Every structure is written in C-alpha cells, then in structure tokens.
Image 1 (tube, rainbow, N blue to C red):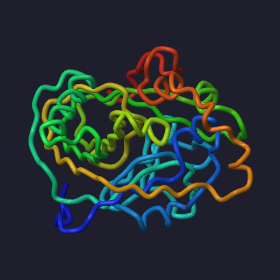
Image 2: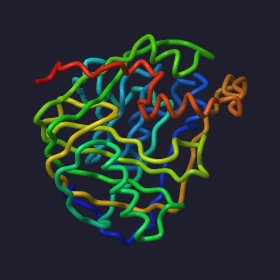
Image 3: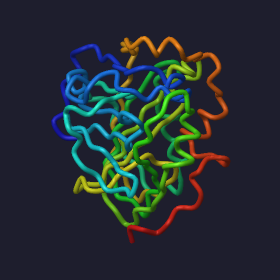
Length: 261
C-alpha cells in the first residue's frame, strides 16, 4: 500500500462490461489491458476467453494462470470484464489471526458499516502474512453463448499457497447492484514476489495491514460489438453467479491441492 494518492479527488469505479454478461458467456475483449490501465491502479477481473485471473496492483496488471503462477499481462491482451479505480489514502487498520474467509468478510463488513457504507462500493488492499491462501484460476476457452460456469467446469484449477506473504485486492458491491457485479466481497491474491496468485475462496491470515477506499461513482464500459446484443442478460442465473464467484458447493472448485508448500 505504498505511494497511495492523496484523498483529494473523487474516486470512480471503472468497470468493463457486467457480470451478467460474463456469466452468460460474453468473454470477448471490450478494451485492452493498456486501455484499462488508464482508468486505475488497483482492481481485478479476467482476460479474453477467461484466460486467467486478473490482479491489478500498484498500476501493474498481472495474470494468474491455471497453475497459480503469475506473469505481468501484455498490454495488448483483451479484457471482457474487470473493475479498477485509483487507490487513495483511506481508512486504515490492522487485523490478526483471521481464521477463514468468512471471518475476514465479517470484519470488512463491520468496518464499512461503521462509516455507513453498506450501500456504497469499496476497494480494499490488504498487505498480509498468510498461513494459507486457497485460490483458483483457469486457462482460455474460446466460446460464444457458453456460460461462465460451464467454461470453468472445463478449465478451472485450484491450489493452496502455504506460509506466504502478499496482497489481497478486495472489491465490494452492495446487494442492489447484483448483476452489474457480484454483491458482497470478491478477492484476488498476489504474492509479495509477484509470482503466485489467483481468485481467493478461502484463507487463513496471521496479520494484515488494511486500507479501505469508499467509492460512490461508477463508469461502465459496455461492449460495442453487435453480438453483445444477442445475449439475454436478464436470464443470468444469480445462483450460478454466486457459486462461481464465492466458490460455494456446485462449482468445479473441489478440494484445494497442496501444490505450493
């Protein structure tokens, strides 16, 4: 959380497409990584054809591949769905001995509720040391009108990072924005050495330094391609979206494999 911008500018959440569109299978590029980086320095998302998990941190865009290894993303890569903002000096606090993901989410909910923020968007950065981080990513699958859940059933892999330092990029959307994005918290992890990462569905944290940014404005970049209008977004299953985003039973998450002891 170094080099935070001074909190003198209005923060805008910039979002590429909608989660409904991604859930229904619209995974074509809307903008490039280079274009996306013009709108923020922290965020998360995915790449064209669901080719890995995106972690944007410190103004650099990283791609977590299906085995949990991380590379810096090429500026020409396409982005079908992602969110970003410019990170400012926000509310800061520390936390110790967080046993699981639900405990962390409850703590974050409490902190934003203290500032009457449950109806606002939030971006959180957590620099921490972790007993374990259970995460996942996937490889590219070129398709059209194939749902995100079906794609992940074919390509997704999960893994555990043990005894590791790194950062969590956390994004919160309120319940009433369900469909535009996933309600509640969505977390991606990037290791301190920038070599490991992915979409987080469970964790155990020894210690974390936490900074919360509250955001009240959003700009959505909808796809301009004609085939976007062939998708019936209102038919997106909210249950499937929850399964895919939260890693609840019914997704291809399975058991975490101890690949990174």
